[in-house]
Image 1 (cartoon, rainbow, N blue to C red):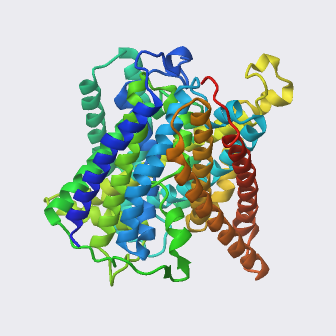
Image 2: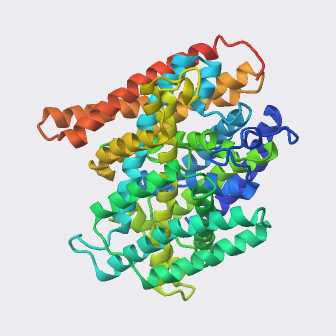
Length: 561
């Protein structure tokens, strides 16, 4: 089938879903454009910062559009392009976008509280404690998987068989990414000094800065080994976790969005010009190399269809910066729709370069970068420039999720130890230490680093399962919130039960595989041992949280929001 037809079908379906289903949910739940949002009522210049619709959308989209929408569809393409496309469209519109919008909506209606705090209000303190522990463990997996990906993308030396061209592309992309951090801080300070800037002026400045960074990065590549880049990324995550939103994350996400949209538009234009034939099998069977379509497809494709991590962004950061409730559908539902489109584009790209009906050798990043760079080359763009641009884009995808997850992980750790108050003057000494943002960040990054030693390939299946289980738990919690506050919540029932079935099946399979490795003497503690401990904890916590939430769902009575 022609790749262009697939992209056009996806644009029509996703656009219709946003205009019809997204707006229908918004009307059913109710939006109040005159209500003061938490960004104003709790404004503190750190986490609660009133921001424009485009700024919040940029943060939401760049944070949720991590490595997932590129990695997942490419890895799952072994089952054929038809099941991947169906899951991206159905999952994106009726599972993922509903969860993202729901989490944002519930948080804004509850003073910008995180999902854990919302669970405490509507389900109970025990449920909140269990959920926050689950979230914290999950953020460790995200950090481990994405840090390994980013470091692998930046590495310019120390890899056997690396070509000069590949080493240069990786190193130039790394240089641009490091410049990104410095320029983002400068951009944030400029906006703070100037005050409210016109949107078109801010956009022009952001794009100009991107061009300058790209030119400098191409001229001054940074060559380093993978282990060095892991340490550098961890240092950046510490800064992103503790610095004010307006100073680093928001300006960085704002600039990143233009780059990512440029990548998506460029890829779509490339598909239109090239209109490649899908060389992937339409359907490869229910069992491919020992992996079954259910549940493998549904945990492999998380971002792009449904991802629990998105709810942590919606309720952890975006809800604290949104200025008007009427902006929520675009931010919550709309950002997910665009991410699903990115997943479809990744599917078409791998379909264009497939070999013998299946994806070619290489990492999903390299497959995607090479494929889209090939499209750009058709327009006369030098292959070296196109490759550096794409490498920079895919690393930015993962890095923008990483900084958000580091901050969310830090906040989750703090919330684990909060009692009746967040006032440090009323806390005992041990509680002051555990809820200190610097201590919480160091502990979170330390355990994330330990899991990084296992490598991305080992972490991804466990990350995918935990991610989807988190989505199921959030959907149940949102259903409780909607029912308790007298809003329409039945649309969440099918998604939450489907995801519960998918994730517990996948986690049990992963646990059996880890036990086999341990029993066969092929395991190491820092890889299989840590993953086994985390898998067991996730399943136990998942069962406890799900039971607590479901019990409340079927006994909840209407009360005031």
